[in-house]
Structure formats: structure tokens, C-alpha cells
Length: 459
Ligand SMILES: *Cc1c(COP(=O)(O)O)cnc(C)c1O
Image (cartoon, rainbow, N blue to C red; front, side, top):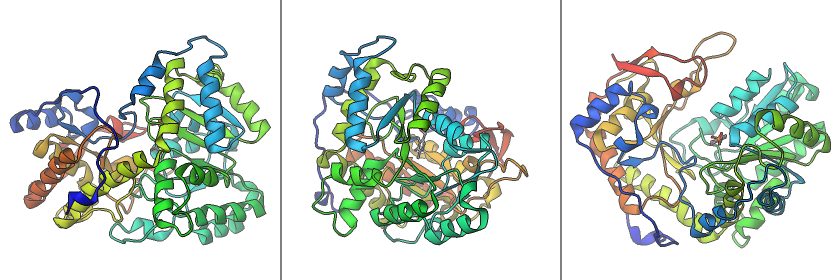
């Protein structure tokens, strides 16, 4: 591994936040008290926090300057108009409805676009997305290509939709029974895997023939665009902005979590072209979020989001972002650690099945691996496996995802390559005594989105 091949940070540091490492004994106590759930650890007890890339972004000086020109009027804030114009220009959609974060947009879209009993095919599920779809009577169907479920298979654009699966669903259920296709760029739970432009075009063609709408989960659209530029033929000379714009030209709208690719700490929005849907969304947003000109955000937050979204399209930023993640992945691969390949855009996913072959899926291996990694190096990661997948709403049985992973998610513009080295060293050290990782059992299992607040004990 040669650090020389990776780009230096395209920024310099203007403000710092001190972190400290506690002792192994302290970390053992902390994880026990947190019920072996890394979500329940206090931030102060964490040395390197890779729980999520959501809302953990470092803002730029320009974004902080934007915070000072927040127009906090209840209605008609000028920051909303800035955000609206920015999204219209960069994404190309006609209408923008602000929400407090991504799930706020998912709630609105699911309520206005799903009739009970309708199918919502998607390229793998996302926790909150599927929750809102099912809550509104939708039936989620996974139509991602089969290869996405194979952690070790290294092929590009593993997030693509399988067109045959989509076509078969349309034939079997009828186009009128499909609410819309939900296409995520990139696919978080598949390991941050991108979708190719070719696939987006093909999904557009197929759905248009049947009059089915397509909504993107746009949360990591800029990272997806970087992969297209890097790996898809014909895009090397296109700018990130042009690629993002083309991606969205094949959609009817999108939900967006601003906490990821908008480089802010809070915020989100819903986009669409359809006038009727827009009217319905505006009627609902006042119930759940706030006026259509703030949607649960402060004016200053909308300003920071407008500036952040534009910054994220800069090539130097997104190249460093994706390659820093890849650097961590490469270090682990070189040491023989089982990870999902290829390395995706926002995180490195440890393959807990291969990391802990002595555990079964009912031992919650990824949950335990994340807990043990915290004890090993003060590194906080999260489970993405059977615990996150939850139970089937009808049968009450556990969903059993093929992928059983621990996600090391890299916050944007926050950590250095040296931090990535420390994380790699902790994982490698733990791998050497992996047999010490014990299975877990629930002592408290919440009914919904259980991974956030569940508690466990060692078997
Ligand atoms: C984070 C995320 C969401 C939900 O967004 P929030 O802002 O956390 O509500 C939806 N989809 C994907 C792919 C995400 O990563």
C-alpha cells in the first residue's frame, strides 16, 4: 500500500475538536453498559467515530458564513429560495419540498405515492425507506442484481437493478399494482455500491413503457457520480455536475438526506416534477415538518445545505472522499481481512460471516464484531445484518439478509489517512484473536427499527 497514490486533503484545517482514547478496561465497561449496541455509547467514549457518515460532515468556512445569513422568517425565507434554486439547477427537478432529514421526505413520498397493497421494487432496501413504504401498505421487493448479495465478488456497478427481475414483477403483478420503482444511488446496504448510468437509462425505458414512475433515493448521488466518471465508458471527460444532472434526468423525483452528500449536519428534501404530487406533498409537509418554505429546518441550515450541495460537486472534494474510503479498504484487503468488494463510496464493510466463521447468524455476529472492535481500538462502527434487517411485518420471522456486515463509515472531511491507519490496525489486531468474539442474545428488542435501541448480552 502506497499512500503516494492517494490524493492529499483538498482543504486545510481551520477548527479542531480534541478526541481522547480511554483505556481497554473502560471500554469493556462502556460496551457492557451500552448493551453491546454501539448506538448506545456516548460520543465522549469514542476515539474514532465511524458509526455513520450521516450528519457527521465537517462544514466549510463558506457554509459557516452562510449560517450567519439565516433568514428565520416563518414564511418565505430567502434561504429556501437559494436552496430551491440550487437543487433545481443541479438535479433538474421542477419542485423541491424541504424536510428535516431524509426520512421526512420518505414519509411524505410513501404517503402520497403508495396505495395499500401496491409493490415498491427497489435495489436492496434501506431501513427507514422500507419502514415508511410498509407503514403505508406498500410491499417492498428487492430487485437488485444477484451479484450484490455476494460480498466477495469484485465487479463494477454492483448496485444495478436487475431488469429481468423488474420485468417479471411487472408481468406478474401488473403495472397498476406497482407504486413506483425506488432506485438508490449508491446502495448503502450492498456496501455503498454504485449504479451505472446505463442501468438508470434502461430502468427509465422499461418503466416508461408501462407508465411506472421512478423515484431515486438520492442520498449519495455525488459519490455515485464519481464512480460513473471513474469507471463507466464515455464519462471520463464529463464533470460531476453534468453526470449528476444526467442521472436525475431518468427519474420523476427523489428523496434526499442532506446529512450525507449535502455536507451538512441536518436537513433533507423531496423533489418531483409532477404537479399533483407536488400539491399533495405541500399539503402534508405542513402536518409533519413545517411550512413548505422551511420543512423543519432553520433558515441557516437551508443556506448551509445549498452551499454544501454545490461544494460536493467539486471534483477534488469527491475524489479525495471516495479514495480515502478506498485507502482504508485496501489496507484491510492487504491484511487478508474479509470485506465487501469492491470498496464502495462511503464505507468499508467487514464481512462478519467470514470474519467470525465460528458464529451462526442467530449469534448476531456483526453486532458482536462491532462491539468487539470498539473494545479493541475505541473505534465505533455499526451492524448491518440480521439485527438491522428486523422482522417480517406479516410473519414476525427475522429477515435473514445474505450480507452480515459491520459498516466502518467515513465522515466527510473529518478524518485523515493516519486515522484510517489506526482503524485498520485495530481491525487487523482483532482479526488475530477473532475466536474470542462471542455470540449475543437480545435482552431488549424494540418493535421498529430495532438496531437503534436494542440491548444484548453475551451468550
Ligand atoms: C441516511 C439514509 C436515509 C435516511 O436519511 P435520514 O436523513 O437519516 O433520515 C435514506 N436512505 C439512505 C440510503 C440513507 O443512507
